[in-house]
Amino acid sequence: MDVTFGAVGDFIAIGILIKDLVELLDDSRGSSWEYQALAEQLRVLGRVIDCAEEFCRQQCDTDDLRDTRDGLKAVIDETKRRRQGVAEKLSRYKTSLAAGGSRNRAKDAARKVRWRIEKREIDKFRDDVMQYANLIQSLLLTIMG
Image: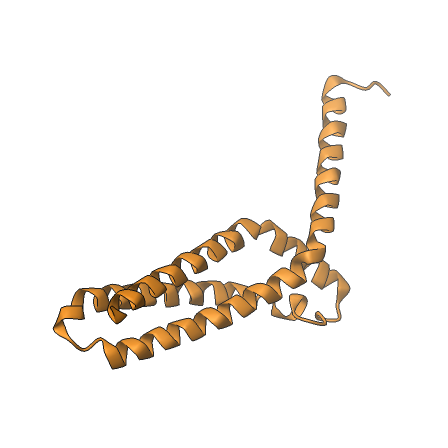
């Protein structure tokens, strides 16, 4: 059997894919913890939204606060929309990545790998959470004077 340059390239490509898969599987071990941490962040963000809405209903009735109130409501609405989108995506992983898993090791491993693949989007949402929380806090501080 002759080994051609293309065949050597194929072997190298396969080797790289195997290395990447091993790294991906190794990285997936922390997926359950990351899922649970993100689920908790969503719960906390929901409470922040609820508190900000309640504060706005009780304290933002005056005309001089109209622009700040409108800005706060816009940030709250955007935060709720983004949170809902991530919560829907997160629900796909609930049985596999929640504490205890689904009891189907193959399914859980596949979901963990998929979670790692979507890591960039998850990290983006975490950054967004911080920005939303900071915006809400800044607007509330502005209202409080």
